[in-house]
Image (cartoon, rainbow, N blue to C red; front, side, top):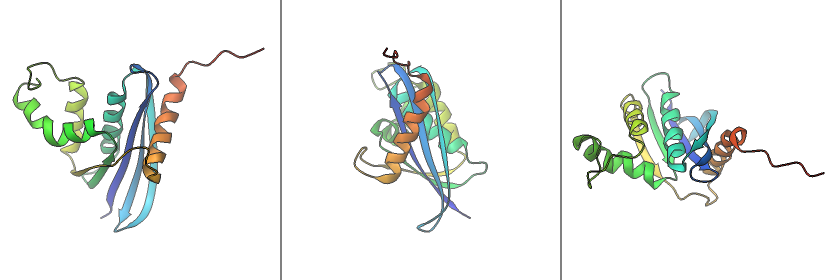
Length: 156
């Protein structure tokens, strides 16, 4: 059975503003990539954190059966949220340690449900550091955002 690796990224023009998410999904046998699929999408009014979450959600939801997968993200928010903070939020009724409502709780719930179907390993990498797959995920996120960005006025 193939293992998967998903490189995920989110982008936003303004925060909030038009945003996009991107995923480079690889099916792998050992170190060899046997298939790749690219996913992207966006929203007219969103935040960078929401788009980072959507990229991870869409990577997991795109798999049709339970699978081993490594999610590679350059978002400390996503990595720390899912691996360190989620359990406490759930225990505290979706409140932070300061008793405030968790931001983006509906997306965290969706991500939690999606990850529960799979054997997930989370990996953080530094963004914009020349990592080719991360750079491709960034390009896909920008493509996902493009339809929602206002067109600049034509010069005459």
